[in-house]
Image (cartoon, rainbow, N blue to C red; front, side, top):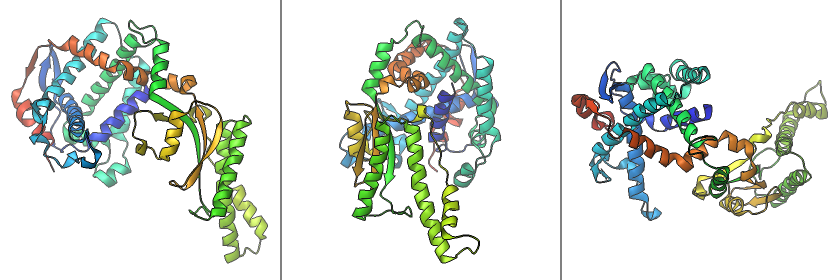
Length: 408
């Protein structure tokens, strides 16, 4: 459940701070859906979500063709645009209502199926809300002038109580989804379909990046030094091919790089200011012995690549990405020099279909890729005839898209 919550939170952070701070109070109800009162803050939250989706759709509309003629959609007048034959404002309103109907449907269906949150689920929600409201974050303070995310939401008219309700419903949604499509569910995705989707969608590799740096850690173009770095990389590829674990090899490699830098730095320091109590060798040894490096968990050693992602979205050499995506041989370490990135990689392409740790950790996310649209359709169909009674002043004026998302 925690990984799902982190994704929800990252989605919030991606678009939330673009909303105009309206100073609304979340102390009333904007509408009733199927007899359930909907708080103002719930509506505002889902309207933020709808607005973000609308902007994604505009980006698709204006940038689906020739990349040379792409348009920065953030420079467009949002409310002068049309989305799916509707004004952008009406599209956002309609999408907001669709999400709110789903919000009600999730609770209704879970009641019918006796799906509830246990103490662990509730504690997790409460901990996330506590972090959002009670822990100050210096990044928000520096860049946005707010102490924490909770302060931002309060300024938008979304209270702590509303956000808690939203997260509880998101948790119920996750449980409902898995009860349908997870193991033992009424429409459970077969393991064959699950593995086939992973194989078609992802590739994975274990990668060590060794920069073309001199002994001080500074970038170099010296050909002799670069050849030394390639030999250095090959020695670690050999360790992997001899059966040593990737976590151990990566740790030893990073430690060796840092020790070389520490040795060069200590030598320079001693030559500039000799230490009367220590010889050069003793001074350098003390500095080198103090060097440490972090060691990754073997289960988290793989880097994932999506087959449908733009190659330039990765920090790696594009040719290396091609190599990983097209590999048909696994678990063999090779070195892959890159002039573009001024480094040499130690690369082991792994078989994502055999990475059971990653599969278990990301099962819900993968199932959502496979069945997410079906699940959305199920919720929409279930809730399509809900009776809605709304406060038109709040929907069309006070909390209208034009009011909440006006340009600064």
